[in-house]
Length: 270
Ligand SMILES: C[S@@+](CC[C@H](N)C(=O)[O-])C[C@H]1O[C@@H](n2cnc3c(N)ncnc32)[C@H](O)[C@@H]1O
Image 1 (cartoon, rainbow, N blue to C red):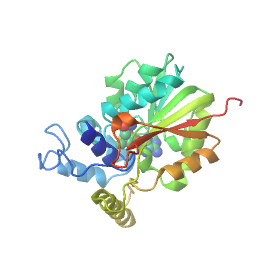
Image 2: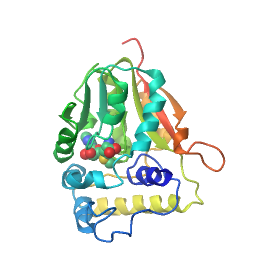
Image 3: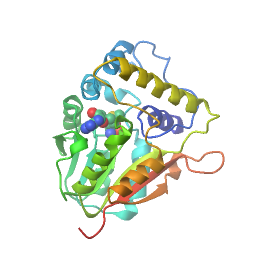
């Protein structure tokens, strides 16, 4: 499970990975990741699109890629949040096809909702979870106020430039009720000596070149949201920030946790 989580956290922009190698890649040279996954050509078309258009294209096959947050990450997140609950209403920010519903459903006693700007991803989410609520919106301008007790987000922070994070976090803060919690997992940074460090730096460089020469841009960078930057931006938005180790997802050789859950709480008084 560790390798699945590492690959997911690597490709899904949650944080830096910890394993070597890309399991699955290369096994299916044309259908990437699995026989049901997107082809190389389809992934290339996605990469030449906007973020919204790219996910619209990928949506029908998204759940067969490692970009979908795996159950292990969702369950570790739910376990870390459980002592803080139960919660009332829940929101999944950048919900995609609805992976985060597994967390919200297990923790929230009220209605649960996903928000995303990809119509294609929302269509998949709606058909997988017809009992949940779905809203199409750009999360850089979230259309909610004081509505949720818990907000979560998985695998999406790499889609936001550092300059966009304050609007994102301010919108989540606004969307929460006083005392509400915003939670998302992050990976520990890779040491400069690791192959992953350089692979991700290379990916980000390639994306910067792509975005300099091609329109529309596809914003997806692995190394633009380290924990300290997320913490600073959350604090500036009014949150009180703590983290808890997700020990179920493993430890590094030095004993430190490979992943942490960021817990950002809105002040209890409005
Ligand atoms: C890697 S997917 C993650 C989906 C899901 N959270 C998961 O973990 O499986 C990233 C999602 O973020 C959404 N997204 C990216 N930028 C967005 C924005 N500005 N507003 C709303 N959704 C956005 C994409 O449409 C996509 O569904």
